[in-house]
Image 1: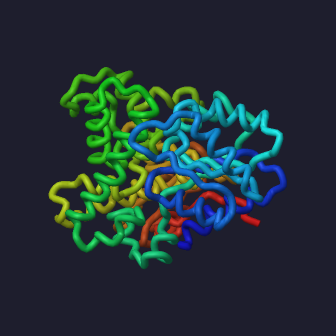
Image 2: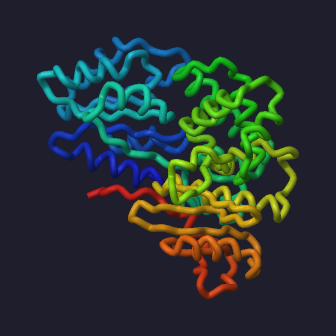
Length: 390
């Protein structure tokens, strides 16, 4: 069991050991170890079933699995990729509410649409979420011995690691085994998409612009197909639900203004950026590596449960304005090379105007300003959500 699976697996295991747990729902992107973690947590107990088929299954299959799980002494039912079953939430609700023998239930899904379409609408008050993140740097280093530079450049999808010596083959794996199922199966099966080709184009443009502020009009101008601004906004939300792309908004002290800003596009694993780069065999330039590092840092904060924004006013810009799960308020600049005092002027200016925020520089090099604390990239890229495991 890898370090990554151990943390998720122990979280699932600890919940199932409670006397009467709620329905446990493990949500997260494809290829990050949800299935392995679930099977590890179950061991030889309970009843496991997968719904990950190209064509949706009918809800009757859940009734069959429920009865089979009742025959097990532990009375545990685990369903992988449950969102692929038509009417899954209604039948789970019915069985959960009416079954004479109480069942322990674990469900997994590869899209946040699982929450929107089933849990909140049908199973409110009956479930808890366990969020499976993309792999962080500490996990990648301990499990695969990935150096920092390689992690920043290629991300860490475990199944792709054996192919890193052959970049073209590695890229094919990421595109065919991760991106295509996420776009072609997870999204299109769960939500009506009138223009699938446009959705793919938007992902492609976003992957080419990591950690960049992009107006929707500029994004629209780079698309071959016709897409209205509301359609582009909608498809960006779908890509976020599939754990592929998140557009963070500009920070305002008055939060109601934030929706009017151009998004800063963050790609949830740098492998999704690198796999679409042409030529894929060419090394990154220093400027490109800086973008990759900034993207990786922003995404790691988001996946660790922080609220992330950017700040921009005329020529002044701060990479990330962050609100942490423990009440942290950080303003963060990311630099892969040595930063000058001039390059940190915007960070200082923001914190002067918003003194409740603390300024940080995420860089392998020491901050040139005493009031700006330095944070090593290894530390930030190893952040993760915290679950009570014991």
